[in-house]
Image (cartoon, rainbow, N blue to C red; front, top):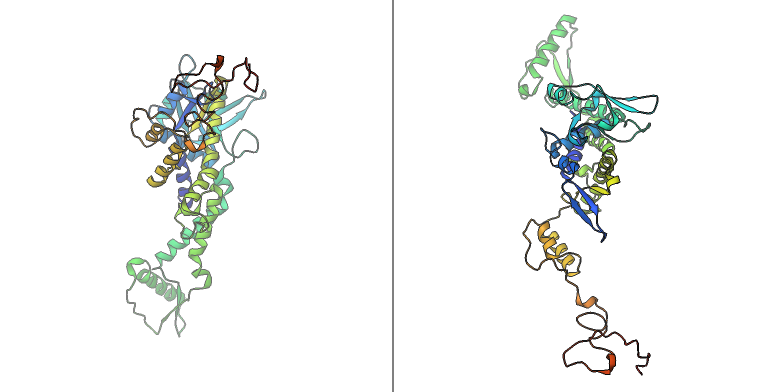
Amino acid sequence: MAVSAVYACVAIRAKDVARCAPRLFVRNKEGGRDLVTDHVIAKLFMRPNRQQTWFEFWQQMMIGYLLRGNAYAAILRDKRGNPVELIPINPDAVMVLEASDGSIFYNVNRIGLWQIAMLRNLPVAVPEEDMFHLRGISFNSLVGVSTIGLGRDAIGLAMGLEQQASRWVGNGARPSGVLKSKTRLSEPAAMRLKQQWQSFTGGLQNVGQTAVLEEGVEWQQVQLTSVDLEFIQQRNLQIADIARFYDVPLSRLSVIGGGSTKITPAEEEQAYVNHTVMPDLVVAEQKFMQVFGLDKEGIEVDFDEGQLLRADIMTRYNAARLGVLTGILTPNEVRRSEGLPPMPGGDKLMVPANTAALGSDMTGTSPDGAGRPKGGTLPEPGVATSGDPDPQLDPQGEL
């Protein structure tokens, strides 16, 4: 995490995923979804444990998931077996154990007094049903592969470039050089001269100082090579290499020229949400349904990514106007999305008149009162009939 590219990739993805608030839904008979708020898991989504908000909890889980490929949270239950708290655990403190009968246990090394107190009722080897385990890419179906382990060479090279930049700045942001003497110097004299020169000219605090050389000693500065001139480009390439491990666009890492010129910022944001954030959300949704058996209850978990795709006000208003005029959204649905209170009569869909079938201007079907009335009796003026054909009449309208 001391490498800025790794920190940025992990922090950006963790915060973006934590911004997507989780919700529970159940399918109704009309094919829609009804929000569930009285379920025990819905309460965990509001307050996962006594110390953390949901954002804090899930951000910590995502950091472990992105760095180590695994995220762990112990499940604390009440006397009825209902989950009441989720306690996050550092992935480095967990070892997955396999039993001969296929059972899975998690050996947890308690770190800190708070975690010791929270897990006091759980055994050292926590059974699988009491552990929420979010795993990434895995080769054995049990433990995810560490991302920083796979990218250790790329991260190590970035650290080396960072240290090289630090030494370069420590040298006054100038290339090194040599001290030349026309006479032969003894080894103690050469070492003394070198130390005096470094102490006098090294470091930013000595930039611009005037040096006095004796005995005909001259300073010759070494010119910058092509490799030195490409140093910044090397660092940008290393940032791009680390970004590949986390699938984060370079524009989000503040790399100059990192964004594509062929797509707009809105399209780039949509691509980031679709290809980077959405897989994280799907993994979390399916894991919650599996661990807590929500699929057996017919309950769906949904992480709302709408906040990540929230456009500017003009784009939102134009999209809302299109949705209302085409009969997709009601005015009140639009007002709720903007944080405004509903208005009377705003729950009715507006149907565009130009999409109605030929016939009545009101119903879009056959004209009101069309066809011969039942029994041959004409209706009073202005009174519409159903227009249904009389079963006693033949297709030609004769008795």
